[in-house]
Length: 188
Image (cartoon, rainbow, N blue to C red; front, side):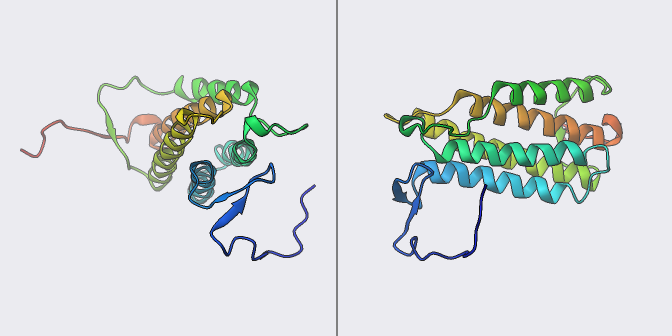
């Protein structure tokens, strides 16, 4: 159980922060950047929830909770494994895949790339998708560092989440009927 009585601690005034393992690292450490990017993605999903209907809100609420799990996963490096450390589970990835397949079944196949936009809900979901992609890149960059280990399911989760947000954006655009299509070279 988390209990926060005092919000500021002053322990980060020197430019460092504490990982879930207790280790202190610089606030610009790539691990902190990675879980910070996940937090940013979570905030954009929260903003997207303001524009989506009741059909998507429970899905996005679940995703927001999963993203906190993912942040907790990244906050405790696998090499500093603690008993009971929270890790993203492959079942969470499978759930994203099932949701993506369920929504995609009602969409016409794409014949062109689409531009981010359309309805306010679709535009907000596209913004969230691009922030999720950036967070995924940060996590992959962290995983590529010598001596760093990242739960593979965390990377899989972010990859599938961006796919789901893309499909949700198309669904929010009249099940794809109102997608804004890219016209290659259309402004030449």
